[in-house]
Image 1 (tube, rainbow, N blue to C red):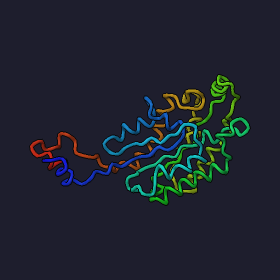
Image 2: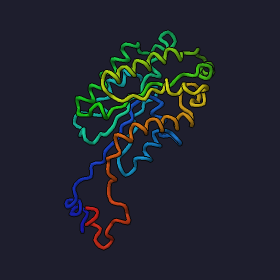
Image 3: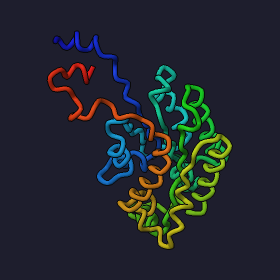
Image 4: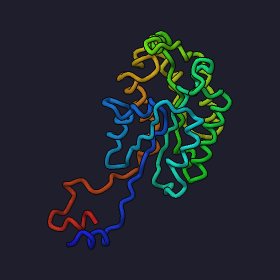
Length: 243
């Protein structure tokens, strides 16, 4: 059977996708032992996990590019979940890092605008998860800043204000929220979750993966495996199983 003929006989496979949208903590999540890589492994044969992490970005910039990443022309049915994970850069101190800093009220408004945009293209609130920034371990991040000739440009208490704003937006919009800032600090020494005081360590990646999976699993458990297990393929007439 010619490939063109085979393609005509079988309907097109629409592979669902989970979109991870965020800053460097998302971009780095596909590295070895990263939380995004963990999700991709758990969801293989069910859907694609698409990394749209952009190092250094804040919600002011993210709001502008989201329609380019998930345009209205996309089938809403194909996007089964979206995570929005910003705040680590927005919460930078204005005087010391004005390029990345976004005022608290604008940060909340930007998150709300992104949720509303997703809903406008058919991605309902039950498929959206907001993730707060993790806590900042100030002494470790200060060493990182000093090594670059900078001052400490973030504060954990300030990051906490942004985390609270993110949680409020989730409540107002009816989405799920993963409050990493609160959850991680339930451990007395949360520094083990962080590699440099800001970004995730291997233990931090494992923590995020477990927490996020507990939320995603409920949303995606009904997704079928795509294409039959190899033992189930009729080797005498494979087209009967595969088309």
